[in-house]
Image (tube, rainbow, N blue to C red; front, side):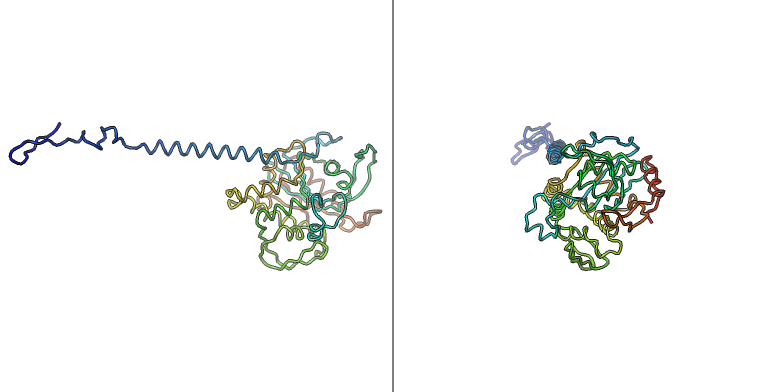
Length: 360
């Protein structure tokens, strides 16, 4: 109700009460703004945008995968075990490289491709295991039919020969034949993709306990902590002549590098920065070859499982070696696996048991 007040000269004036007047809550222009509702709409819009970007990124990246290996068509495969087994291969493919790049990266100009690294990543409920397979492992290459229909009988050669003869398909079959493990997925990256991936990340930070110099791979690195470019990283993971045990020493370098690479690639500085994430994804996927059933989800599981293993959350090892300098009829010196220890290891992986075997 308006209240009366005495004005000048006894005149009566009126004042507006709390419920009336301009700007009061009862007036059309005076309603308080509903900030909670606006914040809710803004958050919902942000979630929708992020979801759309994530879905778009997934299908963009999934579409870049090159499916080149048909594991389902391989004959005489082992029975499926427990857990998931990935065969991860680093090849010396020079596809897409110019002569100047080959010279700068010390890759040579050999035709075809060979493997510089082969690893089985076992992902299971009792701890993940990253198992390196020496490329000079003297194994049985099972009988196979070549691309021109010629049938080849089973023979003994270095593991790397299987890849040179029949690519990822024959290599997978050879690994399955000699380990008894069924390979569920296959992933391979060549020289060009490796260098591009590291450069897209802005280099990889490594700490070396001693200087490394190798004219064959082009490695010329100082001791201490430093950022390696793509070319320097490739030289580091290929170097073997400075190590007393050569290929086994190279595998230690590869596992050391993978640990650093995985942690840096999965860091918030990379994942949350689209200007860095997209070039890294593009560089990594452009030259990646996978099996026909590998999805981007499978690839992500492989990457983060590898990151966990190399970060100390699993077991990283080499297949137990029996003889490291075995002369062969046509392959030069090779290495053999310790039959008893390696068989125990393969059985534990197949049954997804905790690995108790040592590679020492």
